[in-house]
Image (spheres, rainbow, N blue to C red):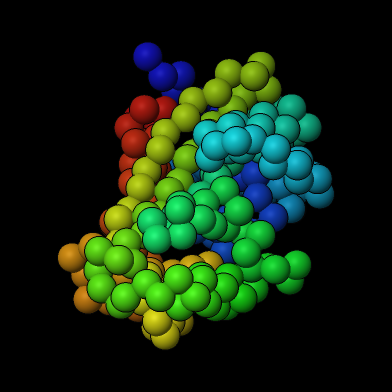
Length: 204
């Protein structure tokens, strides 16, 4: 049985403002004070894991140990089937040193073009992954994994969301994640699905 969250304050182990705000929005119904690792000046640990689960866990544990508060971390990424699952764990790295999503999106499109991947749903199939790890200062960790199937589109469309949302069209949808409202996106997204699993397990 999962350990319930019983505190009033939670550290979100990220320095990404967009991600922190998305998590704050998803947890707003529970009246929990949310602070980010960036707000607390916590350093980000090296992501040396070999899976989304491992990276989310090490980030959550590092923040929980440093802050002495429960900490929530996510490790997420985009896997493109025609690129052998890349960028996967290295999704953020594909955005370059400036962490510019357009750099990453152009790289994906460039790789697809170089491999002469046709512009069809099956050929451009991709999956967003999100693993959430909730850690306590005593090193207990709860983990969940959400995913969203879709395809890569080009050129990017929409100005909402963040990261690779403008080039990702969910399966069965006609709009990209960046063309959806926050509520529409959260209802189907990999992170939204992971959050619902985590809420059911730990926040009831």
